[in-house]
Image (cartoon, rainbow, N blue to C red; front, side, top):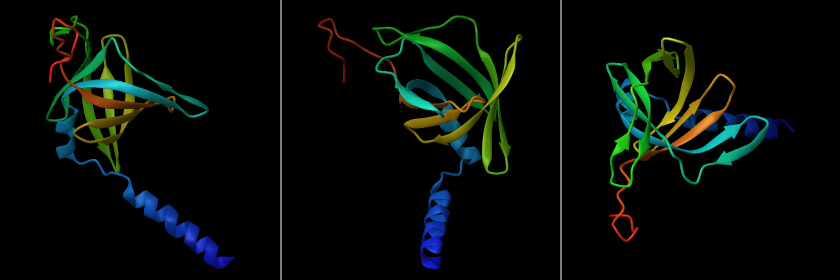
Length: 147
């Protein structure tokens, strides 16, 4: 019985130690276009996104910047309006928070993980947003995507 407890404890500690620690250098990976792949809910099934009309565009320097919703166009450009959210990156112990503000509201999300290609953010309602890095969508005249 005691051996099983130690085995379970060891596995839990191992998994906890495998969680990515986000460094200040990782924040540069936020810059660019991000597309939501799915949203995970605490007490419900995940919601998958096959295609998105809007992407999130981040531009961060020295832990401050903006996030803006943009709409990809078939010619590889993005449409956007003048609306954006100011973003400040805040490190607290082993957590990284994105503090957003507009003239109308302020809120915080936690940056759970980030790599060159993927990102995970959790909001205050425990919804986890899984993003993939995106770029321009260029379609040829025959509807085929360019390489």
